[in-house]
Structure formats: structure tokens, C-alpha cells
Length: 170
Image (cartoon, rainbow, N blue to C red; front, top):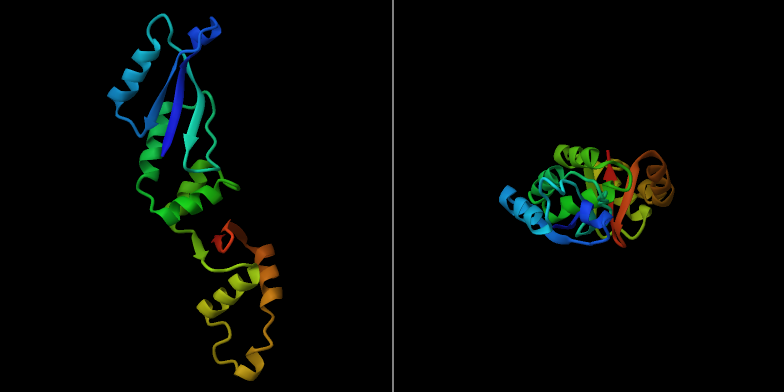
């Protein structure tokens, strides 16, 4: 899920680039082995992350990110299903990591598949909510899904996941 290139900062400052890729989540022994391999010791205590590779496009890792915190994050994300990971990725456009995780864990979102537009999302929401239940069909056909879709987009936090999938964040 997340690979980071851990680099010895002291050696880097001396003009030598010594780093090793570490796949997270990792056991403490694996992390320590990476530190040993790049020469993190009493003389060279500092390291930084020079590169990373993640399956989550909007996840940004800083060069001085805490590896233990990243490890915990990846362990948590490993428990998410594919849908939750997609929503998490989209949430990172608006929210920080902690807020995005909280929204996923609380189920503060809904996903609408096979919707090419907000008009399609509006139609799905109307059908799910029963908004037009009991309204005669001769009147219901005049409901303006396009306008309702525009209003939804203004009033709620809709994010497009891909070309035909939308998520609404509550």
C-alpha cells in the first residue's frame, strides 16, 4: 500500500545518498533493519523520506513524516475495503488524513454508481428517498432532476470518484 524511500540525512548532507525502500506496514524489526542498512546509528541519527509510492493518489507524505505514524495509518487502511479506499482517496482532496479516516469509520458518505452527471445522482437520491412517492406519475414526470442535481452540488459535498461514480460526504 505504501512504500517509502528512507534516506540517511547525515550522509546526504555529506554528499552521499544512502537510502532503502521500506514497504509499510512493517514490523519494528523491519524498520530497524532498514535503519541499520542505511547507517542510522549514534553518529547518524537522522533520516528523511526522499520518495514514496502509494496506491492512494491524494495521499501526500512529507520528507520528515513519522514512520511509526505512517505505519499505523497503513495498518488501518489495510482494513478498509476497496470502496472505502476510493472514498478515502477522494476525501483527501478536502479533508486531512484524520478527518478522512473518521468520515470513513463513521460511514459519513454514500456512493452513487453508474452516474455520469449530478442529474443522474439526483435521480438516484430521489428514488432512494421516496421523495416523489405518492405523487401522481402525470405530475412526477415534470420533476427537474437537472436543477435538483445542481442544488445538491451546491448544498452538499459531492466528489467525483471516477467518470461514472460519485460520493457524497455528509
